[in-house]
Length: 221
View 1 (cartoon, rainbow, N blue to C red):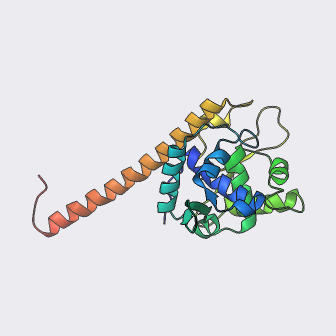
View 2: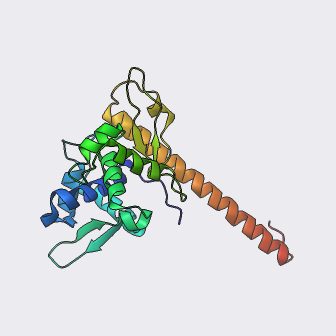
View 3: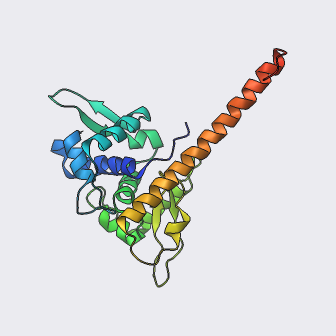
């Protein structure tokens, strides 16, 4: 199954679910209100978002259709859990790294080790690098990529690819990116990836229709 590029808010939803599974296990799976609050959290988030409950619900519904999110009942309200490990076929250590990238944006290996500590405690930076390399070279397609070193920076940063390839505009930025600009760039990248996938699908359907018409002795027109 080829997964479509996810929007910024969709990756934020997944990141929040993966994070809260470890940081507030007693409240997990999350209600919609708790999930929206986690998406709009002012700490440990980059960029800061202000998503409505309706927007978060729409993302949850789409992620459910992709099996990324599962819905559970048993109380007065629906609760939601992630299914990242099974859908992507990656271990929990890799999910921890992906979650931090989805929540905080591109980071260095050292930053990833520090920021993922509550989700999984990596022994050292070499362990983080090992899982990043595995994620980048998956036979089914890379899930992370190492970005070019920024001017004046000592270390390179890594970013996830669940929203499609990083936009060229983000690769040359030498300083912090404004939240609104970052949101726009990531959303556009996801849309472009989805459009390309739809165009390829349409081309295949057109070829199939043309072949069937030819076999039936009919002409399109």
